[in-house]
Length: 617
Image 1 (cartoon, helix red, strand yellow):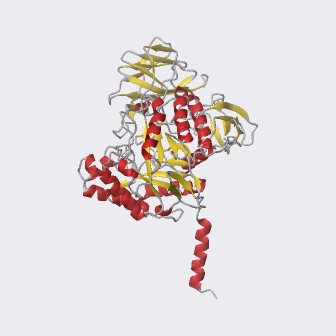
Image 2 (cartoon, rainbow, N blue to C red; image 1 turned 180 degrees about the vertical axis):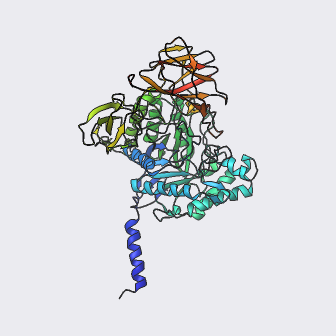
């Protein structure tokens, strides 16, 4: 007869087994003859770098002064669903973040100090790994960044008051980094119960991102990894590129037993030479190690297609290729956006399935091409695209600010309204993109009447069909309406003086892709469509001193400065050259028929909102 103690532990085993998430993988990826192997089958891929999957640097909401946050489950699932939809089956994340003095004080991180780690951040990483297993997506896991973005080598050195290059040779700094490695590899996932060193979802550990390390450092780290983890492959994360010269690898890596994979990154100014540079690297490696193209991008669709065709054609010589980079849906509506400072002031991170907002770099055709190649490298015909799932409406405070959590693969959305929770439903907006105005509400329902109460629902649409409707939200009472100018040209303005359309350098302006710019003496005037209630202006200025005035007029001839001061939302980090975001607000100045913005210095405008009611109220 089973003892009480035995019965208890048997019960706990049953409970834990039932609660533990399913793990999709039967085996680790291995290396043989210069190829990645999944059992006895070659393992090849075309997919994406997803640098925000473990740590978001793009929370660019206008009033947010800290751009860093940890991704939540909705956002992670959006990534894995996207990768599966695109046939990618592998993602390369970014490195383990390290606390930086240049980040806002409230910025989350992973490595707080030598040997000190943030448990909340690592629990977020646990969720990522659990979902990677659930969705059957392998992770390439770089360990340290050569650069300061998100924290890396310079920050480890700063902890000890040393110089960045000391990281390669200083015994204390090497020991600090090894402490991070040990913490990560020996960590038991709080969701799956599996140690990271035993997690089959990890394709390989990469020593780091674009490292300028001497080979002695590389060997010390790769041997440390192998001494702790006998399951996973190890990739040399040495820089792998030198400006416009052919990418280089550490030749010692080709004979070092603790290194399984070598990689190159490709950002040559003439992308037409990249296929030959890949061929040159193949000639150097000669299948002594697995070789993969770890990063490429900032190139036209045809050039990227030529790169992928080269990779696909060399089936025994190149395991795969990862384009830079993919961003995903934001929990607060829309997508995360990331303009690329090194992308020639043109490219942004890609959004699936591609949108007209990315027309300058051919995003829609680019994403379709990458999907074709991702299935082609696996020897598979491209399947039909999936019908999107139902989106989720976010809480609605007023009808001018309706947003939802987007659906993977949706190209647009339809919004319906009703005066009762059960309908009847009528169209409020159709063919709405959630990739037009980043970090602002997605939809303004202009078709309502003031004093009305309305319910809303939304569905997602793409070429495969339409999702079910979302859950109903409401009722929403309409106390006022809002005239919104998203600064896409001068279409909503009444008059403009010395105003120009601003383009590029979006990172400095909270990723706002549409802006109007002015200098001292510039003016922009609006007609108030009803009884004036308030005016809100989202602007960017270089300094702390306010350089904009808001004026009002009842007749268009006599103007007075309206009351109200600007609120500043300066981003509390120094990695990028941010202009200072400011919001100008004024209210209660009725009756006004006109509102004017007067420039006393250089500024750029991202959005204007005029709240109004009916004239007879």
